[in-house]
Image (cartoon, rainbow, N blue to C red):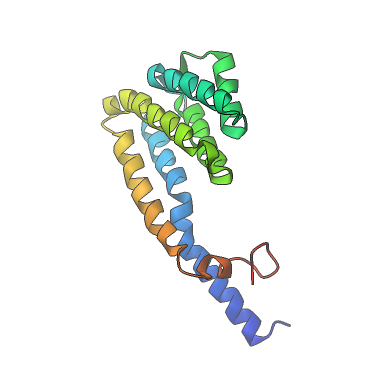
Length: 168
């Protein structure tokens, strides 16, 4: 039997998760929209992305920062694709975002690749009447807005279940 205090705390945590969720899922929703318009299997030439990945790979290697971002980029470069599908670029984009969320040391380099992916997808999406860069800019604005909530002392911590790492 849960006490009224436990039930109130649980309802409060669920509410806070709902408050934070749009900021965490906005990129996924943006790619879902793009994939529904372009189709998962639509090929995207990697003119900008390949060049960016080569430069980023070299820069990270020279810095000795050979972790997640470096490995992800190197694995794609080893396959030497001239193009990737929209679904594959979604996976690469979201993977780079996750990699830099865990380790910010390669964020600048990851952003170079993310910008190049945007340019390459724009080259295809504009033929479908969609600007990928505009969609990503809108998503970033939403995410940044929700990230500001994290600056409220203890708010994010209260959104975690009791007993979870970082929970009260």
